[in-house]
Image: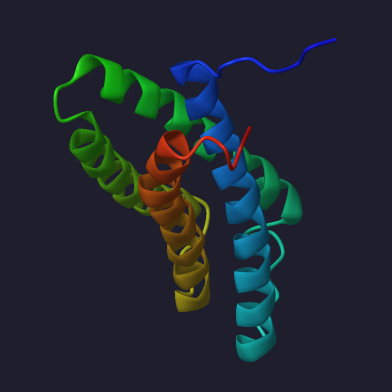
Length: 141
């Protein structure tokens, strides 16, 4: 059987998002473990492993799909995609902290740093790794 076939742009975008999500998951787990070890902040209700794994992968795959639509429908698609990722990352950080504030009176700085750090990792990988993998599909094929 011959499994050699040319990847479509959509499949390269989704695979780039998946690969970016896997790297973001490992990076986020490492970041959280190191940060918690340094600060002794162990509020496990804040960011548990399930949220880190599925959140990183699903957000990155959604970014991969959005990357496809931006590249195919806009003239400067990669630039607009990166702007969209930055705006979305800021919105997710704000929403995550605001949501936590709905059921707690005070939000610790440690929680704010954890949320901000994990989202920055996902955002940077989505903004730069997905376009790179899209152009260099031999890495993900």
